[in-house]
Amino acid sequence: MKITSANFVISNSDVSKCPSNNLPEYAFIGRSNVGKSSLINMLTNRKNLAKTSGRPGKTQLINHFIINNNWYLVDLPGYGYARVSKSAKKVFQKFITQYFKKRTQLVSAFVLVDIRHEPQKIDMEFMQWLGENQIPFSIIFTKADKLKPAAIERNIATYRAKLLEDVWEEMPNYFTTSSSSRMGKDELLNYIGNINAEIHKTS
Image (cartoon, rainbow, N blue to C red):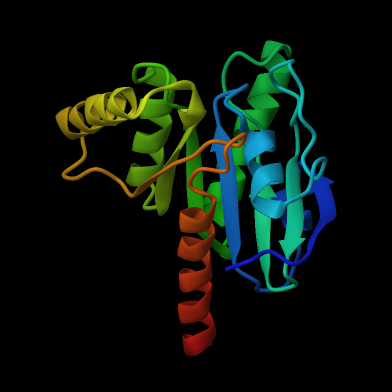
């Protein structure tokens, strides 16, 4: 799939105010400063579609972008380490939880993880929460250009072992990406495109 158009639609913290049509949605979420905005800009071929910042916690709302006029890319606030107050974090957590539980248009979440680091408790707990709530998701390993291929494989193997050690019977679907080298772009977009094609067949 190629992205030919990508446009901002709405930002809000109220799930009931998200777009009311039934177009499929794919939600991107991850720990603060994981490279989410850079990945979104790379996927959409837009330099500033999603705002990038060196300051963790820049994304603080549910942001909907309509892609090719037939599906939504949803940019969700990062979790953990954001330079905001505890009360603000509670607000983020509440509307993120409501989004995942109430948004029937959601097809899949993509959990972004920095491949350079060993498995983080906050990521593992969030993926477990998605699993417990039967929310489909894939892992996107980011910043793969920072490592050599052998290190990438080694770190993914570490994640696989950790996930299987916890509550998972098999490794969740995953992609290895780099915003600077565009690694993984085609694989990720084709994955979304194939799901959309199946949805359109049955609708």
